[in-house]
Length: 349
Image (cartoon, rainbow, N blue to C red; front, side):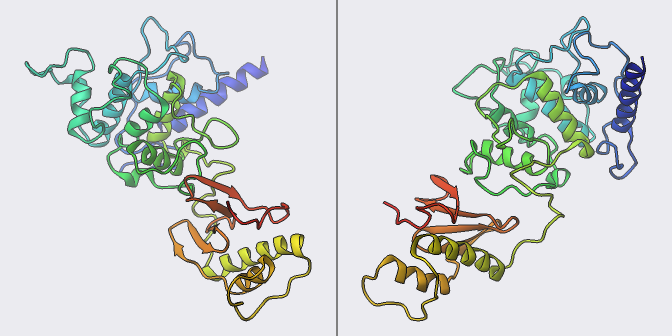
């Protein structure tokens, strides 16, 4: 009995937190401005959603904000697959509310538009406001299930103002294991939402599974994080809170790499002594490395890494100090550098 009372108290406290807001800004436990209570939450509003479900808070947040209303007859269908039409609908609702506009669904479909589904006004609104480019995945119908990556590309544009998606995580380009930083809208959307704490990945590696389907319970959780900044989360293993660390200086990064390379050298060749002068012509690995380690200088730099050319490029992550060795470009193969590995300093190819 006490357990049930405690669960009900926690649910009430969560609801109060989700509904709290202050004019002109974001309350410590509230939603972004403009997202009011639309549907009051009552016990049993959905027969298939209980307080014990991990997605309970997400469903509550999305429903009370009027973003998702269920399948009808008191059913939310948390495990149902989300369609592109549904993502366009909720993304357009979020965008319109944030802009102080009416629900796009209240607009009538003009004659001759060619649209013929309930989603027509939402799809049109999404295109007109840059939320969606009008394309699908492999030319799939708009009312067919959408992949997680395609949904992220749309939802990343839902708020309109990127200032409402301020980063709380540092996620280096290429750090999400199954999402390369390839310049696509899908990749950019996923990285934006990871950095804002809206997406958190599917497992301990931070992988996103962009080609898998998206369930309705997952969409509800994403929507609640979009409109409620305090519901957003940091991502273990990939990132650090943006305010928890200052980036390394070039000198600090150089020293970290020098220590790692020295340890790797000693594992292969024995005690390390720097070499002041660069040997002429072909020289054995040990002589070359002794000179390089003493004369490290970055060949390039971006917002997340210093890049040092040695035998192959070594990338030092600015916020963690993690060292990666890179073959044929960071997007093709990068591995965390292990100075204790027997082949840590082996020539590539």
